[in-house]
Amino acid sequence: MTSGNHTPSEKITLGLDFGTTNTVIAVADGNGIAEVMSFPKDDNIISAYRSVLCFWQDGNKAHRNVDSGPWAMDRFIADPHHCRFLQSFKSFAASKSFTDTPVYGKRFKFEDLLRTFLETLAERLGDKLPSRGNKVIVGRPVTFAGYNPDEALAMARYEKALRDFGFTDIHYVYEPVAAAYFYAQKLTSDSTVLVADFGGGTSDFSIVNFEVGADGLTSTPLSQVGLGIAGDTLDYRIIDNVVSPKLGKRDNYKSFGKLLPIPNHYYANFARWNTLFLMNTPSTLRELNELASQAVKPDALNHFIEMIEGDYGFELYRVVSDLKISLSSEQSSTLHFKAENFQIKANVQRSDFENWIAEDMQAIASSVDSAVQNAGLQFKDIDRVFLTGGTSFVPAIKTLFSDQFRHADVTSSNQFDSIATGLALIGQSNDIERWAVKF
Image (cartoon, rainbow, N blue to C red; front, side, top):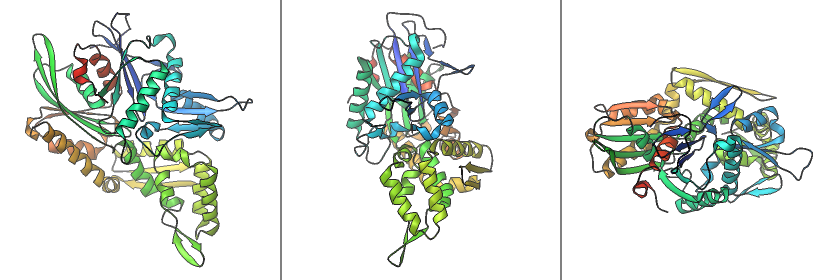
């Protein structure tokens, strides 16, 4: 497996890693050479394309403009009050409660959002994107994000979006299996590998046995386990414990002479990236303004309203992400968020953050236990552990795996291209159905 210029071949396969935070596309040819598609941007070359959409209108209100990736982010930052910015929308794939969202007079279903995202991404690639008639291997989480996710619904939505986009030969592979396939390319001896893939919306764990022989690499998938706890969940803990209390969470309002708590569901939605953008509606703002008029501390609720009305979600995402990264190397750091009429500044200790995510760490540990048990193995049978994704650098995550697999070779990588490259290479195999997931 190498990365280089794409050479036309009769057997082109595409690997599509559509992630909650980033999307990566890789292309492999008949010679087993894989290339990650790149995008030139401001004298830089990027391969991790942000999974965001930005809609806006110009003078003609009947026309909707749209862009994605870093260009969508640029548009939103330049004019946040005249855009509709959507992030983490992959988290809605398996949600029965999400039917559509209005965007300047048109209602977009999940499959419409995904198709639109792919179309704008393809425009940025231009003629570098191979024919959509080639085989495409699409990554999917082991368990979709959200409460009581409907896997069949998610896959039906994926399928419709991908076919409407123009793909015709579509196969699905678990994301951690693709990461394992990528990792295995460097193996020189037989190994049983556990891959932990920490995305934005889900964490997935896969165990694969690889054998290195004279004819190359052979492999046997042993187990896959996933759960809807990942990077976005850790962000939720920070917002819920640091930001929301400054915006009225746990405060009270007066109603008919009684003191009542501000309903928590507003803050639950606010702390999740995929539901935050849905809050900016006339009905929600009307309810919050009514609560603010009766609140014991109206300033906090008015700041909350400003956050929602001003579409500050992306700026909040940036400061929370920066804090999380800082706490990966420092024992304490400062969250500093500025809006037009107020600011939030708070010092956060790593020990506090680890207390907030303790239940999440336990859920991750239980899923890893299940993956090992489902494979019919014990922890000592795992030779190598590969942690991938930005969240894998959180100290609590690293400690969890290094403690549990002391005897194994545990490595971490923030390589955004591992899953997409693995998907494209799996597409080159003669037994692709052995890796593919049926639905």
